[in-house]
Image 1 (spheres, helix red, strand yellow):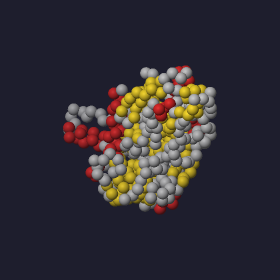
Image 2: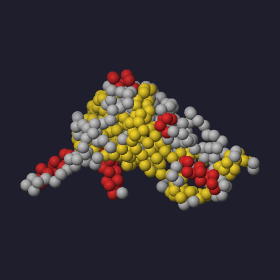
Image 3: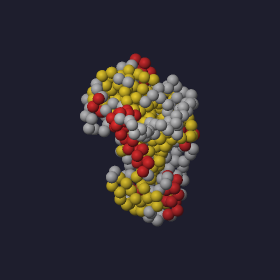
Image 4: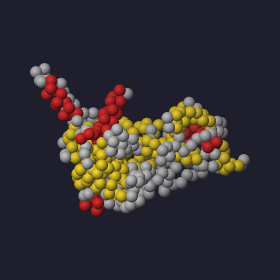
Length: 414
């Protein structure tokens, strides 16, 4: 049995780029909320794995291009849908043509950045506060826990870290009623800030967003949306997929590779290379991230295999590991798991000597790399086995296509 660890094996890492540059000042220690320029900080982030409790804008696994990547060639979205056939057309031919268009996507395998803002703020950790009366932690005494989402304060939506910090300061020690979400449960908790070290504090470290890098799996011309990662962007403190309030894909630049070893997952290293968004995120769930692109990528659309058509045997992985862009690498599907489960459907082994030499196999940052079988899209790489970096899990492409179109439909209805 291969061992995996959710904090390691998804092919992204979470890292706080600002924590190395600046610790919380005395003014900030109540909430311990980081401030600073997002993009400048990301250019200096280190490669360590883990989540710091301060600030947010964390970085998830690293990919990109050596030089500033050129924008995708623009492609008109007109004509991508299925037009009605003339009255004289055969119905069966019309249905066949529609099915052919709707079941085809453009494989990408190209790296991209993600900026995700949460619904409310996340309690990253709790800490004691030293006051004239002694040591206490108001947040802990109110029953709050790391991983809780704070949605409202006294009936008002919490927009971000800074807004919450300012509100706590204005309350001058008066109790604040928070609307809290823990898992599927919403409840209220009253927190009374205390005065310590020159300001009112609650003993919470919170964050309101995350940032990082992954791989675009495919673009769906029928819905005008992309699918990527093959797993959700998760929060180590909340212990699950981060609730998406808003977000955007962005260009990134690769700057190196940490080769994978047994018990030491490797990673692609990089940074955001543009402040301009590439589009808009629509959904973040356990099967991946989905959204729109301002410029539809060009490329030949290929068929998506149904779950029952994916078989054990040779495949190719379309992935980006350096400035050369997406390349095909040889691999093998060793096992196809129960199609009823939403993720970890495929057990994949890398066999291509080029990829093994460059990365050691599958590394963090390759999540979303497209898996092709017999020239058709079969799935996406999602996890690496920590004890054997040549192997990992994959998800069915059909699952991601369904989720992609669900996200697009929901967006149209809103």
